[in-house]
Amino acid sequence: MKLLVTRPEPGAQATAARLAALGHEPMLLPCLSISPLTPRLPEHPAALVVTSGHAVPALPPRLHDVPVFCVGDATATKLRAAGFIRVESAQGDADDLFRLIAARHLPGLHVLAVGERHGLALLARLRGAGITAIRRKVYAVAPLRALPAGISAALRAGELDAALFYSAETARSFTRLQPPGTAAMAAYVLSGNVAKGLTGLPWARIHVALAPTEADLMALLA
Image (cartoon, rainbow, N blue to C red; front, side, top):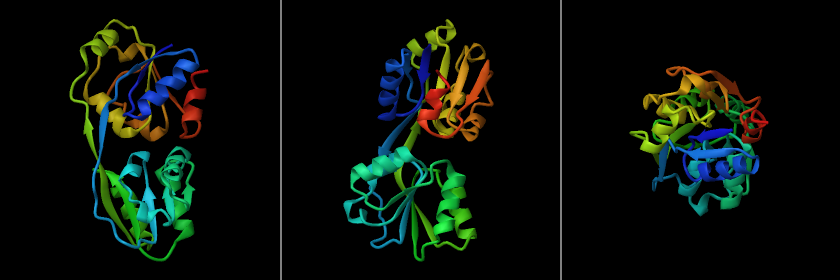
């Protein structure tokens, strides 16, 4: 299949390589650009909460021995590669992450290291559960403003079979561009929450991964 990959870099390139290895023809359209920030983080938090691998580059080495709760295994791998030694993955989505943190209920301050406009609902849930938490923006997110001419032409000509979506924000960014030709395409999404971001467009079908992992998303393409 000829597949549109909408996730941001550097993940887009890695996904394209996996798709090519499976015999597909990927076309890259990163719908978001990610820029690390230099946040002011507490000296001695009880735990870090990470909802995306995009947060990892902004986290300083002095926090490497702090417990980290993260949303999934891919982010856990990035955290360990960066030097964090006490990483626990929720192996799912934001709901699973909340349940993991609530179950551990560590005393002290939990710092949500998130992107702009991210983590507000999780912060409210943690505080509602009696967990001391604050939110810090560690990366900036900028949506794509216009479709590149080549991508627009390929969509309009019906050259693409499907598109892949890894996050609700990416799905919403793609939808805002009002791309042509989606009624004849399938969408492959990481979770039901991601699928909600596509409701403003017509699709031939939306396929949701059995679990919110790239392996499960790729399994849909087999």
